[in-house]
Amino acid sequence: MLATRMMDMQAGNTVSLDGLIRKDKKIECSEECFKLERNKRVSLALQIRNPDLSSKITPKYSDYLKDFAKKDATFCSKIHEDMAKLVQIAKESKQKTRLKSFDCMNRNKRQFIHEYAEQFGCLSESFDAEPKRNVVVTAFREKSWLPAISLLDYVKKFKKLSAPTISASTALPVKLTTLAKSYSSAISNSRSLSNESENKEKVDWFA
Image (cartoon, rainbow, N blue to C red):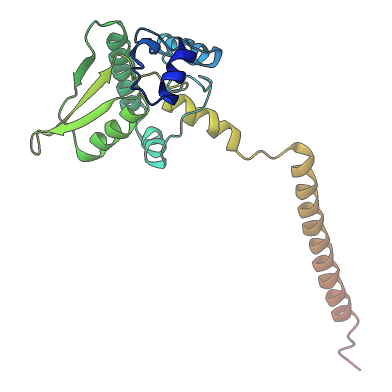
């Protein structure tokens, strides 16, 4: 059929190509396409942010979050539990999103919730005016996730790793050196006083 159409074109005749086009033809999924699709399904089930990355990747918590966790671990733990529960409910829900309205709180705590919500793939927004201003967090069924490690566990883990340690082999020589110097100084002062005393005893006051 194709050869006949080409001959007609060479002869200057009008040729229709409708019969050569298959409108119902679908593009077959390659092996790479199938792998990406499979990883996407697995990521949704395991709540991984990026299907191509491991779930063990440590989140990048800001200095503000880390400092806040050190000052108020109780508040941090409560917010983590609330957000984790919200994400889990969203994953199991038939609705695309689920909401969580937090209590009214000061600006610093609201900022904590805003930044921490990002670590769960959630959207946060503040409502109302001070002093009744609060934060509402939205979790998405197909976009939100659970962080590989909580903020409190992250702070505890890296606090232990960064804590300076002094071994006994390092500390002992320092102490011995200090004691030796003190002992040497004491002996020197004692000898000086002894010499002065002897000189005074040898003076002949009647000469």
